[in-house]
Length: 255
Image 1 (cartoon, rainbow, N blue to C red):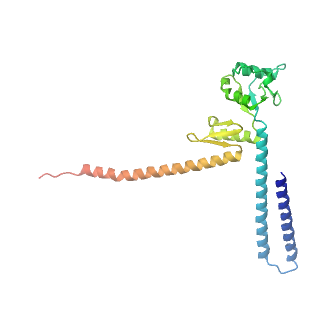
Image 2: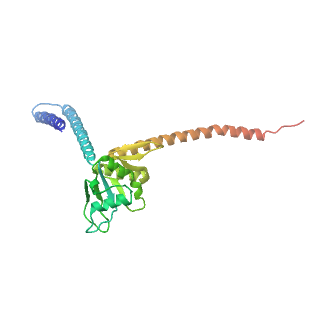
Image 3: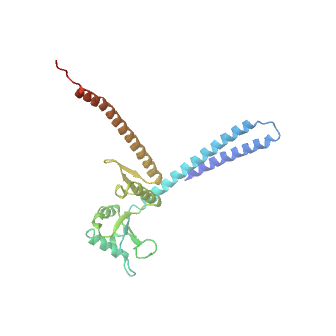
């Protein structure tokens, strides 16, 4: 953070100096025979400097945002979200989760002592139950529950990772483009299935869009290459077909 502030203040000083120099030159235009071309050239240099300055600042801010996102995701490693667990006014959320893990996931010996924090998120809206945030005391237990989530199939209850806002948006964007079955999350990363056994891990919408562009470009190149090969194959087959027709049409004259 200190390095970012130092960079920002340095750029601001340079920007103010350039602004003062340009302002001084403008004031001299009315008193000295400065050429318009000189002022135009100076303004072009200044414009480029400003563009580079703000581009550098944007990159620094993106780097800071990514670091903060990583830190926030690291603090959520032991948390899982349970969706679809019915709620009632007098129900105990921790007991509800213990029942789900014992009855549905068949995790033996699990009790409320294995839960560090447990509460529902958001406000009640209609008949849809609010998701339950569950924090486990250690990562091993959390992973055990995570990998056993297939036992919740056809129960109406699902488990998801507690993603940051940016990663959740990237996940939604990836599923919208590649399909639900081609995208999932693992250890806070959004995983996208590619061709064969290829797997792509992303964390931001920017990375998702870059992946979409790269895969589209690769698909276009492959399609063009296949079309070229097909054209060459058809071209080479044409003379053989003509020769065959000529051979069949040739008559032998007997004397």
